[in-house]
Length: 550
Image (cartoon, rainbow, N blue to C red; front, side, top):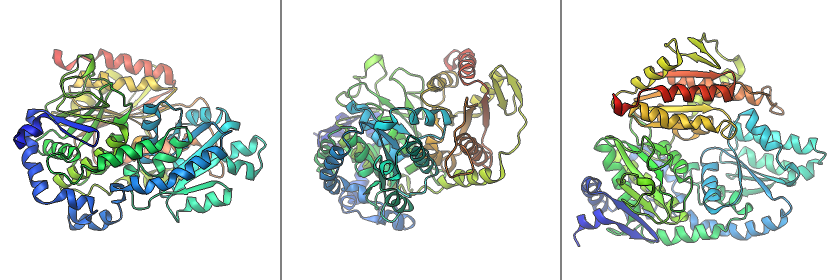
């Protein structure tokens, strides 16, 4: 079998298969050949920090622990079994974490069918709902590598106060916390003062590559998942990483990088319905934050189903993920993807991590830094101190107040979609309650159908820890729709001079400032009544003329 034919049909190994179309195979073949000629598989397995160039070497040198973290994570298993037994009466697991600290555990719990409450928001309604749910049976896993993440610190403060208000002593309240952080972080000291259980993570693994570290395993093990199985799957898959032709992760990385260089610099991530749930949300932050910098990058677009608008396009690499199906076998009459990745979840994590790092080398960027993430955080801190900047609305229509250049909602949406141009994208950023206001996410497909362009949807501030890096550091071709809303009731952040509502508003304003500083098209819609405003927005988006009918 020739090398090219092997690439075109499939590469299988370690329980996982990557299949690519003929078009992608032809583009990937020379890229993969170059990677193999340069000895990249063996160098990556050896954690060689020089793979991404001199400028990236220092950062890569302290961020390659993910290559074999599945081996070191086995030391956690006895601790986790013992901890679960000790906390057996606390059967409601809440994870307070952002970005890589929360997205992998959410995928694991969704896929393996165990309940885990993921708290990755500053929305006062969503936080209050979590606090009011089975408090006496709750264990809170507080996850933060740096220990200084403002959202996670606010969650910790709110839960601690709630436990104390429920009549617990400080020692009793401390028992309800498990803290996962890097050694020596401020959170480690705080946790020990609280009397919380502390589990230290691998300091040489960045947050978005931490799925198989304590960040991914602790909350899911407490939720009742056999995390040893995930490690077994990753270990089996790792045997393929030094191979030449039978190396699925390198084929995927070469395909992603080659496609981006050839103009397909957006990747549609679609669950194929064959046994893995929500992997796209995790892969979204991995790909966007790793590649979106220096004006380059691959934009991940999470698409609801294989038939949803936005799954295809002239600049889109269509990728399906799941447990068993291949190219062309997508349920729901979806079009055949360019790439399919099928295999167990532990192998999927390691495969996408390797592929993203490889794509970074192909694109010539450092996949381990995030130079633009702090900008919105700094803006937020300034706004919390000085107050929200004043702004005059351009229109008020029903339950929506608009800030932009247009005088009506429909005109504003049309103008925003038009601003994306032929090669751009539209990003919807909703600073709302992702459960109570879940219908807001339906606007993504409506705008994709109306524009013919890739449209992403992110819940704020969650997306700031993932696609937020791409928005600022990637190709400056995005048009942005920010949605905020009045909260029915606010909630104090104990020990801080602000509320959750004020923090949420400051984060939204800080991100608007970061985008405005880049002269990107931005439409801000504020919902004076969330439910009515969302319904009004969906109705307006549905009235826009579909792209294919123009």
